[in-house]
Image (cartoon, rainbow, N blue to C red; front, side, top):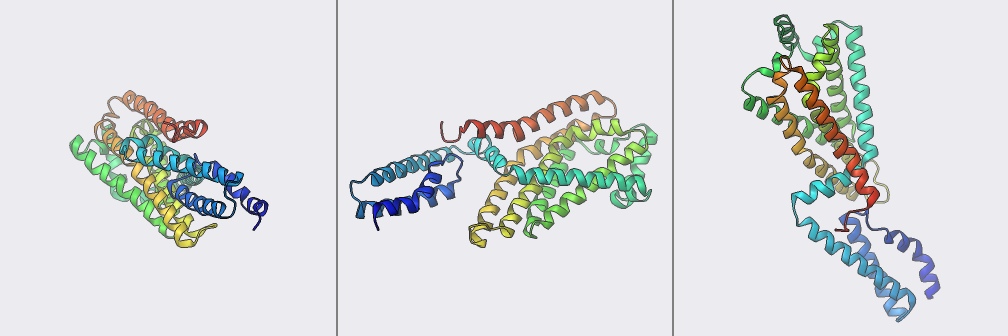
Length: 318
C-alpha cells in the first residue's frame, strides 16, 4: 500500500483520536492499541516518513494521557467525586434528563389521579398510613410520622431504605430499561398522591417545607439512580458499533459508577430526614432553609459543576 493511500484510509480516524480529553479509560486503551498497530505499519513500510513521525507523536500523547489518568485514579475517592462522577453525569445528561422528565410526569399522574378518585390515595399509600396521618393532622402534628423513634434510628432506617430503592431502580434496568422506568413511575405516582393528599387538607405548603427538606437530595438521587438503570439497559438495547455484550459491559460499569457516586447524598438525605424533618411542625423555617441549601447543592453539583468541567476540559490537566 502506498503512503498516500494509507493516510487517506486512516486520517479521519486519527483526527478523531486527537480529541482524547473526553474519552473514558477503555476507549483510550483501544485507541492506543490501534495507534500502535498503525505506527508499527508505518515504521515497517514508510520509515522516516512524515506519517511515522505524526503517529509516533500521537501515540506518545496517548501514553502521557493514560499514565496521567492512572495516577489520578490512584488518588482515590476524592478524584472520583471531584472528576469522574460529575463528568459521567455530564456524559449521560440526556438519559438522566429523560429520567427526570419521566419522573415529573409520573408525579403529575399521581396528583391528577388522586384528584379524580377519592380512593386512589389510600390505594397508593395504604390505609394504615393515611389513617395515621389523619390522626396526626387532628393532633396538630401532620408531619408526626417523621418524629417516630430516635433521630439516629430514623437516620439509619431511612438511609438503608433509600439505598434499597435506588439499588432496585438501577438493577431493574436489566429488564431492557423498562424496569427502571417502572420504579420511577411508581415512586413518582406515590409522591404525587402524597402531595395532593396534603393539598386536600390545606397543608400543601406545610408538607412541602417538611418533605422537600430531605426530599431534595433523596428524590434527586432516586431519579439519578433510575437514570443509571436506563444507561445500563440502553447499552443492552442499543449497542451501536460495539458487540452487544461489550456495549452492555461498558454501560453497566457506567451505571454502577453513577449509583456508587450517589451514596454520600443518600447519607445526607437520611441525616436531614432523621434529625431535621422531625422539627418541621414546630419550626417550619428550618425546613425552608434546608430546602434552599439543598437545592443550591443539587444544582451546583449535579448541573453546574459537570458543565464547568466539560466547558473547561480540566480533566487530565492537573
